[in-house]
Amino acid sequence: MAEQLARITEVHDLGMIALRGDLDAIAAALGMAAPDRTSIATEGDRMLGWMSPDEALLILPAASRAADLSRLTEALADRHALVADVSDARAVFDVIGPHADDVIAKLAPIDAGTMPAGHLRRTRLAQVAAAIWRIEGGFRVIGFRSVADYMRLVLANAAIPGSGLGPR
Amino acid sequence: MLILTCPHCGIKAEETELHNGGEAHLKRMGPGSSDEAFEDYMFARKNPRGVHLERWRHVFGCNKWFIAARCTMTLQVFGTYPAQTPAPPDHIVQAIRAARPDWNPTEEGVSE
Image (cartoon, rainbow over all chains, first blue to last red; front, side, top):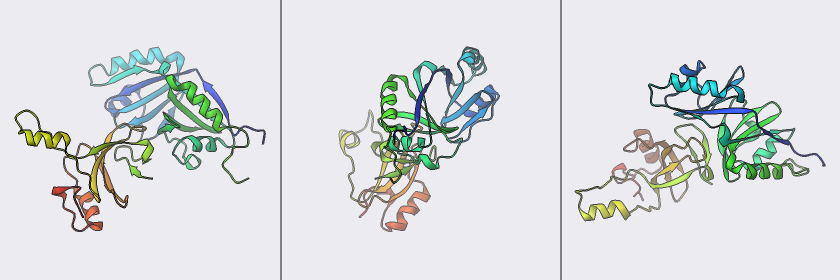
């Protein structure tokens, strides 16, 4: 009973680049395969997530974000496209533990328990926008940094010991 | 609870993930139109008890607009299609007619 449902940790070392435009052209500029609808694909130390029919999110180590930003801006210069470094506009939380799906299920209107790996679900976390996908042992949640305090609070609250959703 | 499938991302989104945008397929009346036509376009909205075509935005998801055909009385959803569609597509009309044989797409939203 004294165990938290899941451990909530904030992740700080991620770079994120928002890409808008034709997804095939963006994928070609990246040298990665275009992501399938509502999926997130890993390639080496990079991840490419499908955000909407004309938007993708590149997640990469913070160290390589400046180099990738200028490389992508150059590659997409002759197209109608947006390349924006949004690393500092995002808050990232890892929700890891045996009952991580209970924590997510309390806050988002999604079936966290049956969410497949590789699926990127944009939804709401309590009252704020978030994107959620599976990582080993739990979920990774990204949201806007302006509401990071709120996200930290609701996640910690949903993980209070003894508040699991299963029958007792 | 209302659950609509976003035609852009295929997510079955629950009502709280969406934002309602009111009546769909309005014809814009601009400069040169009569005062009556502009007043109609600006203020008059259908509020049917029955089949209604309305605009929704997947605001906590892919952020795209789409149109949902649903019954305001029974909450039956007949289907959704992208907002860039000027008139209800055939498969939506057929789905509505299967449940409401009298419904006429030229006066959408005014069945019963």
